[in-house]
Image 1 (cartoon, rainbow, N blue to C red):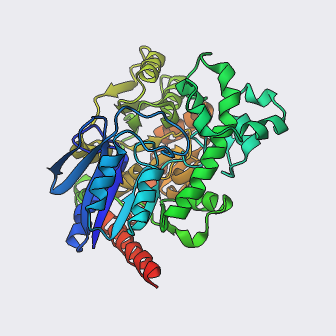
Image 2 (image 1 turned 120 degrees about the vertical axis):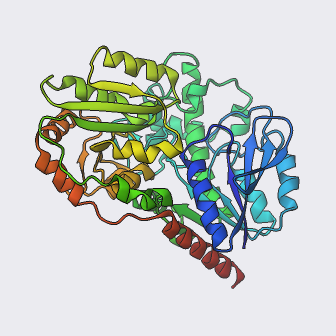
Length: 457
């Protein structure tokens, strides 16, 4: 079986969890007879092909940089014809797209379908459903995920809320081809992401049409994809709620890299944390508000100084202004330590050095894999009671779930753990077996085969 794995970028560029996980999954599938090539965009005018870790990588040009818009590539980007020529020359059985962006979106999927390949899309972020990109209704509570023109427009923009519902529905009919000709600020595409007033008056014109386009884009994904991979139950339910046929969906949850499973024994903690020794709380993640490190900082600073605890932050560059604000919140608190970003090889040892791993996400995650990685190393997880975290952490068994933005609840949880060694030990003992990436590879290949057989019938 030959596959094309398509992503918006790839190594040796700076990459995130999607690319890292894919790079760990492909060698295992290769051992099982599945050959893979990677197709990834490149912000250059020329295409290139190279080998990375034993896998052929084709970088197709995306130049000039396209505008972001919610159908994630309804309009082919500059250089798309080079991708099209390359894809036509591939004799692949499977085309599997792992992102849904202007650089790796609808035109790419549609072309693969037209070429007769079996097509799959993995949804790994809330973006295909949520104009706000977090699935937090008005930024405060979990949304049911149903795309509604009026509700979604109101959720995204304060000025749009001042318009009658009938006007919002009318504005949703404005063609994107027209909006593309208007110089819109980036904040129009994610109104809650960038503060300021630039372009405010244009947002009510744009947001309803963008919500409608997102709704259309989701249906187009279902039309051109033979199968849509989802990594968590909440996303499966939301897609069904939005009219995606269940026969198009396949639930395939993440597994941990084999290095975590193979080396778990050497990291397992055999003894209790001595009383009085500070509880080591770890955070691994992007410097981004949705990852919630500011919640941990505020919770830690609210604790009395006699609570034996420390917070170790290993941040990944993302939003520099947010990072600076977060560090300013730390002030001179000696209990909070900001450490360098970790390499992939350093992650297991770092997690094993924590007593608990904190995941204070302020949005709905489809993973995160780091929950499983912590559990494989015998480390309980303290996480937000949201999305994929809530699906992976059994409250009171192998970790604790906390209301995402409730500072006092986070502080109380940390204080309990810091002063009750029996609770920490109970959570450690409650950690069970962890799904591995080999299991994920087997399930992925089984889904590939099933979808191909279904197409051939």
